[in-house]
Length: 112
Image 1 (cartoon, rainbow, N blue to C red):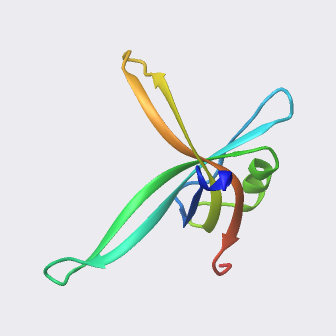
Image 2 (cartoon, rainbow, N blue to C red; image 1 turned 30 degrees about the vertical axis):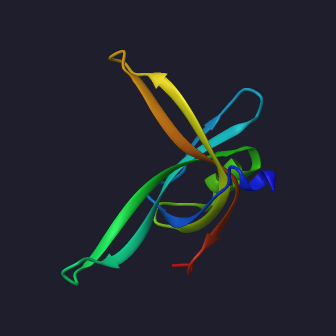
């Protein structure tokens, strides 16, 4: 049950190609953002699409695989955990960020 305490599963489309950084110890980090869409009808019966953006971090083998096979527009399913951090921007303001650290991903959808 411990894995249920901080678990995220999402299916969405990549809004960008993976941004990959390599470190001295041969470790890689890939950053990507995916959009998830919820479609519903409002009180007037009009179709409304609510898009949420999620920032994802992939490390090691997952980052390498993402770099090789993922591109903007691809549909993926991910499983991971939430991670929050803060930093100080160039103007001295403290900013907070919540990201999903991906354990596994699967490229889904039809190949174009």
